[in-house]
Length: 268
Image 1 (tube, helix red, strand yellow):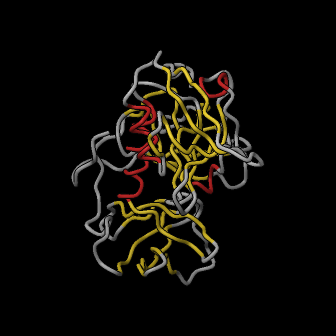
Image 2 (cartoon, rainbow, N blue to C red):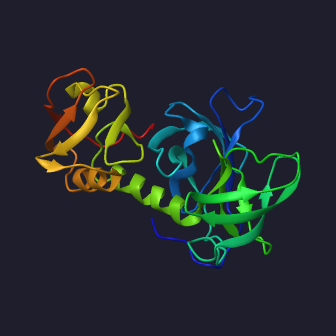
């Protein structure tokens, strides 16, 4: 998807929840580009399918998890309705600019002032209030421009930058077209792409790929990250067959499985 510029309307936000939107603490998802994709945090999703999403128009729909990237803390969901995501206002601090900035977290109760501090371990949100940011809460600069979204890590609240969110959307787009493999991939820090889950009756499931498998290669070409996987799938069309080499937990050797790619079902 095309990357937003620096002019435009506020970011369309959505609520998501694993146990339904009546859940006490739904997370937030955002649409940065037009289309069917919204981005949230990995912690909000944790590999689950069938998440309810409340769209900006108030409609509630069921989404499908397209991408879960534990390494970056992001997840991308596909919703059946196209989101009219206007070009959003991005803060000059939204990339890798200054080492420190101030911002506002849009919590469910009231705005929360924070300091955004970058160091060798990541981008952290520091605040002095008892009000804690919700998962996926938007972080804005003092001019109301988007800095990123909040996720709760072991070390406290951290910032997922706009650049990281856009990278996740681009990786999801690469997995979507022009062919569909039918897995939900995930990554952990390192050089591996894991199969978090397989979509029922999808190409991978029909061929025998299992949740927990690690994708080693496609057509003999090593797969070490989500970009590799996306490029390998995008090089083919629906109906093409690919040889996917996977390492299976408990197995002594990698095995190669032939998968016939298809188009993603319209209902997903």
